[in-house]
Image 1 (cartoon, helix red, strand yellow):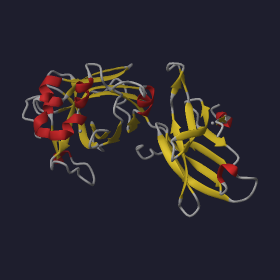
Image 2 (cartoon, rainbow, N blue to C red):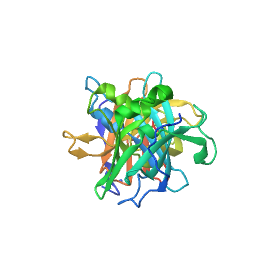
Image 3 (cartoon, rainbow, N blue to C red):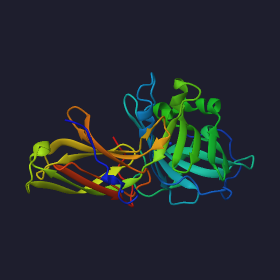
Image 4 (spheres, helix red, strand yellow):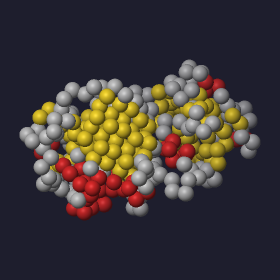
Length: 311
């Protein structure tokens, strides 16, 4: 099929063992940050993976969901790290004043190894990994948190495979989390994941029963509950009986011209081949995007809640 670029989407916006290390003096509340703490949400490095598609050692697919712990200076980080087998780890992070008077972010693991408390958040159910604490520098430009990698390595054998997803360096700026995980050390001294906060979109799609060969008619199969995230979110299109149609929508924010031109891109993908049949693009900050191919129409708008983490 001849690729068609449809750009009416420009409407609207153009549309982480007990730690025996003595890190702490008595725990004191962390000092007020120079800016807001790391913003809750889901972060994903889909864009980094796409940009490095031809690299000899591309980065793994990583997503991090940050949730407020409901207690001062606590947050819960759920890390999904593409490995063999895939790794999913949850850390509780406590922001404290350390023994030197600075600020530290201390990762905690669930007291019952492998079992994350299901309901509510109780710090007593989490064990601190003091050796892997990240010291922080917070400024108006962003936040940088860094652990002593050698000291942290001393306790990782007792943590097991989950240690791969321990953050050693976190740079937080705007919608970005740039994280160097324990596992990244094997990829080189500069290896890290560049994760961008996922923007949720919700909307609808109308699919003609005759598919791409449709002629004008009324056999439209509607889905009014589409939800996609901006960092590689994908939604399979189905017929009205729930059967797969063979096509999907893909939403992402790639960059063109060597990274100088970012866009919000909505693509129609043929599931069997992975081929892109058509796409539309808009400004990366667009609040709406859509596409109209005659036989397929779809419209998406920024939503207020975070979508599922992309597969």
